Length: 356
Image 1 (cartoon, rainbow, N blue to C red):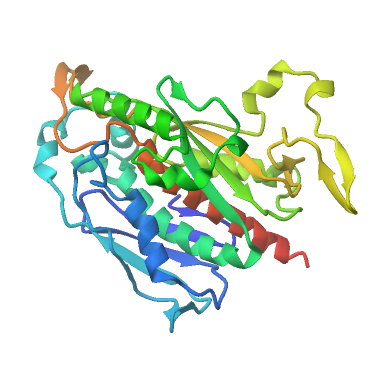
Image 2 (image 1 turned 45 degrees about the horizontal axis):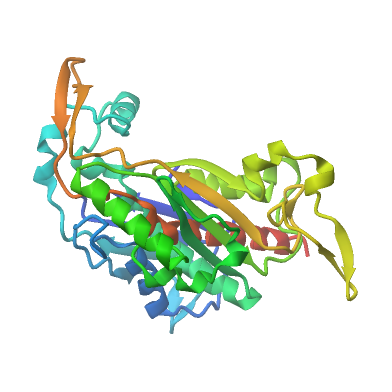
């Protein structure tokens, strides 16, 4: 289960402290112009060490393509790529080889496979998401010909959150601060909170909101191939994600149909809706409105504080983790959410094209 997608398909490989992280992209349409600067920029948005509120691990995260590209365009054949790891501090994990970190994947991996790589969490590390960002960047470039735009941003950290709908903000300024929040004042509050939590050796969670514009009507399949289900699946494969909701989400439970139904009207010969409480998806199929959803991230499991736990012999012990860790994943998770969204939408667009 290291592959994602149906037609546009990514298979990733690698561990946090192995030689590198890489992948194979299959099903990418031929002739997509690849802007290498854009692809590297997407990786730079995810890479560690980019601000005082992220892990201090330093990695260039430069992607090397191995196949599937000729004269700057995709050829329709498998695209192989790799990003070499260069700054591992594997000794930081020596005290965790036989101890299970609370709320981490140590115990479940060890029980399932009978072996695990304790260095940085091995395959369970969020460093695996580099491969997703490469594939997501290529998917974004493929989606440009359809004018589909995807933008995610941090909308909540701890108790600090944006009060308004995404339409009230200029999302383009989200990239101007370390937290990736489109409200400069809230961004400053969030950054101060993350720095405060980090100084205590603790971690904190939050919410990322994502918006996809100009998605055509008709993406998604009835019953088991619903578009929102696919987006939910994509988001829930990201490390530390605990929840997904689109449109009104859980708020929909509070209202009557007369209050929240999206009413259709004739908009100069085009069918439109007066509201978008459905989040751009009805019956599991895109309806042409903006698709928007929220992704909840838990606080990072690895904290630099003493915690009670057990070792592999079921003996109770105390663990104090070492190493370089994010106090909050949200700033670096924004491009990952966008990448998974882009891959899902391109995949469903290609599925839809098979019907024509």
